[in-house]
Length: 430
Image (cartoon, rainbow, N blue to C red):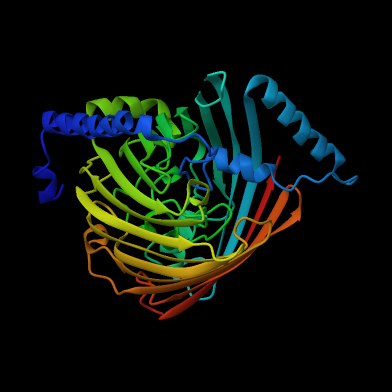
């Protein structure tokens, strides 16, 4: 390992730091509980790709038609079953193909993902102001071509980063299996178990690689979140609303966790105790607007990991997105990182989405990034990226999203100064 790994804090110091971290979170929890009003229903900050938000999105636009009567009837049956039992589950199949004009290996990459996700509300008070239950998501991620789309960017195109971050070839995996507890009408939300850090860190309405932008530069952390973080690992998150405009989100996850072997994450969390910690503060005009009118800043720190092969590091992330009218939402996002296995030392993105909460969505983004010399082992040239996508509903239960990514100076392909990547994504859900 590198020299920084020798300077890691002893296990005892890490444990004390973790206890202080969670003690601070719970002090905030108890100090804020008395001051909250009880007038808003939706207040937890979570990604559009989180299980609960994906379930809500799938449930939208359910006008009955004779052609889709069977599927619509299934939707109604699931809704009634949830009202009686507190259990709801959906499934979807996602497939995507990408083709590039200038490459170092293959011109075409394609992958697919099958997912089953849902929740089971098990406890709650009579007034409905608090609720507790299980949240789950398991997947089968597979490739159609030599390389899955996660590898297509760096291996085939020569792009330093991921042109699609979630379409890999891990086969069966558990992404979520955690307890979600809310208090006081969702003003306080706590997750613990096997979690996905992208569900709450640096949340943005267009950050889902399943339904919005593909490239990692427009997703969580803009590519500057350390540790090449696992999107399925043992950990905990606490979200607290300070008042109607300000919220805090703190979390800690096991950096050595593997979604393909989720049962081992509990062991590595407590034995190695090499973790990624995040703390975020955000501002919004009102709790109902948190998802669409949002400014936040996030700090993170990650321990060195021999299993992952990364140094310890830290960084800061910032984001501002603001809905203008009912459909137009411009955004500016970026981050800076010092080591920690981050893809980029610095990354800045700007763009907009149109009709982000509707069935059809247009997204346009521009990015500049500087690949991390610490991660890649050498100084690489700066990259410039633009992406345009248009998601539209074919039917109530199918979506089609064509996209194009333009890359200037692909850092791992010195034979060209420019490449274009065309993509087509399809999603069917029930």
